[in-house]
Length: 132
Image (cartoon, rainbow, N blue to C red; front, top):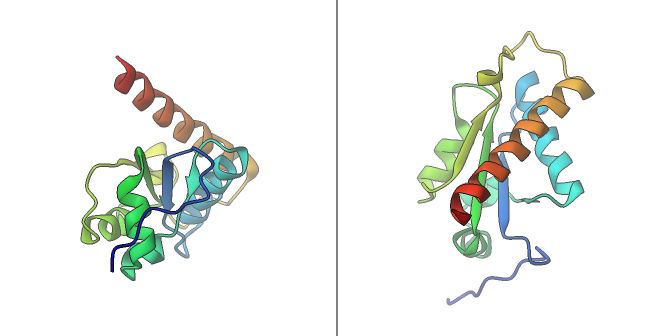
């Protein structure tokens, strides 16, 4: 089957995939990605669709300009899922690398905002490099 890209991205071809694991820092990362999605900075996309080999999700992901992958901890579940799906050209952020510790970091709006700001910084920095 030859599926063509079909996305409600409204011209935005930056896609974000996030671990949505049970840990507090996974929730912080997931909610930060949702924050950027709601603000229109990039589009949140379905990591389970990559793992499930959903063809339309794979096609749209291959068609993306940039991919941002967010993990909570060093298990790197989202990163590994993307790699198993054949995707290796992406920006990766691990929330624990920002000093937040798994099982010891309550989810707060302030922490979500810190991660969201870092994601925006990564997207902006990557854009500047691409334009240079």
